[in-house]
Amino acid sequence: MEKQIRRPSADSTRAKILAAARLNFLQYGFTGSSIKLIAKTAQVNHNLIFHHFINKETLWLKVKEEILSEYKNTPQYNLTSAMLFFESILDYRFELYEQFPDLVRLIQWQQLTEDEAILIGNDPSSPNNWLSHIEYFQAKGCIKSDIDSKQIMLFIIFSTYAPFLQHVIPFTTEQKDDYKNMILQICCKQFLTEYTNIR
Image 1: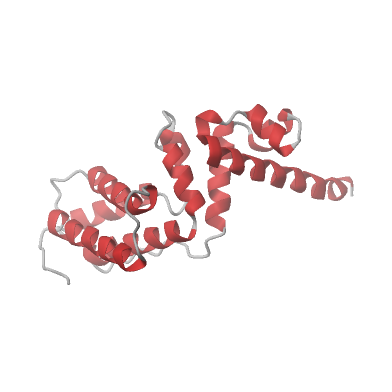
Image 2: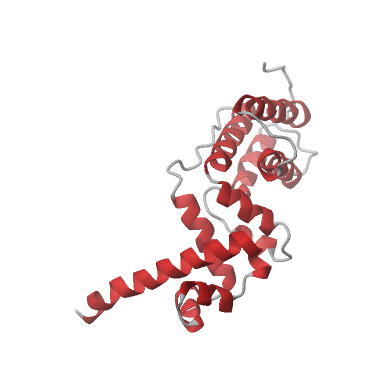
């Protein structure tokens, strides 16, 4: 009975901490946001943050997880062919970044952090989940096996970030679609063992 009385208060505190962390991480990044600053923004004792989230890295991952939970579509990668697999990755990531600029901002800060590998996490949207699929298509002889699967992953990661991380060139929706198709063409031409112009 006592736990039921305390639970709403604990949930409220946790929500306040997450909201404050999101605000600070977006403005100052991981390195620039201290637990003390987050506690001050949330108006809670800083020890409560450690109680709920253990450390700042966990808090960062929970903020990302919260943003991703607002996105109703989980990644559904098409494994019918390597080309359709690449296309499904691009469709998912472009839609995700278009709808959640906060996530793009966090990723931008994340890349400036020495602890980036820790901050990436392994949620369903994580690029780390592509590796087994890339290696599957390499084993089938559909994707070139002499190219490191992590290099393929890295190329797709930064190619898909690019239109959303920069503000130098304003992209229309149509231009973003053209850019996405260009990435797909490059992936097929450079990584597939057999290439046919798809458009």
